Image (cartoon, rainbow, N blue to C red; front, side):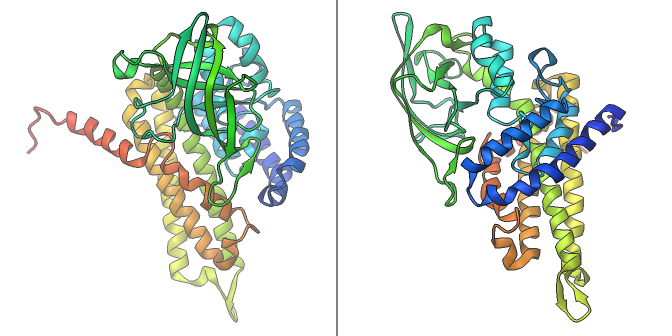
Length: 401
């Protein structure tokens, strides 16, 4: 691997770092106070500034209006933007839109691109991805109760989904639904585009997450699909290829998630070190003088560096060999970085003491909302089992001395 960052990327990252510090971090006070409705017009102004700086949609193709960065380059951008929960949204590269854009670009028809993809990349509309179900295990995605039954030229969708992130205010959902229950398990489901104003698309609620319901983009919806009728032309890709398409989405998506988590680690680490340096605990004594705190700082620095290098290596392997060849690396970074982030955030909170429990810093927000990183996109345990199986296969018929 070559760790050299091009002069162009250094300039881009410098501009992003400055923007995050000057324009976004000052808005976190209102964000943490749940004043999202008042904050959205301000964020739109910031988005306009990002467009003027020609930094909009960094990971999306240039022909669609994005910057067209490589996976390695966009990973560095996600690290920079991950320092604040407002970063990805302001730069037009947030999930679930980022993944939906990717699969619409790869598998969508020209008609679908015109209606859904172009305005989505431009940031004129938002979308959501409706896969997780209330009564079905997320660790076994081939188990799905939501159905899409053909009726004339339409699909009629019925099912109960939740954790459909950002459904509140989304223009459309990409829905995973069973279209052929008699097919092999991985060929039963398809992806179907469902406009949110379709009768039968019912957003039941925004799910409270550790006491915070959220609003708009920053929310997780529970949706009832009740005789929801859409034309069959809304099928994304081929029928029965829902899981194939999902795998295309997950590889690069996990790189972006993990680098965002590294950004959270970096922000939490900076806050922890600043607090240790400034907090007086006795006359002429600071927290930073305590060896236990010094150990927290040293361990965090080493763990962040190790996790970051793992992610960059996985991104490099995806670029060089493709997602399939990088399956082991993708699974390893998922549980490694999520747990690293949790430890670093926890240490930062501990060093802040009672202040860390409040929303006077961003740390409590990270602690509440990023615990889910060990659950979504495949729970830690599933990824560990997958990695172990891949490793053990390499030892078949091998003599070890």
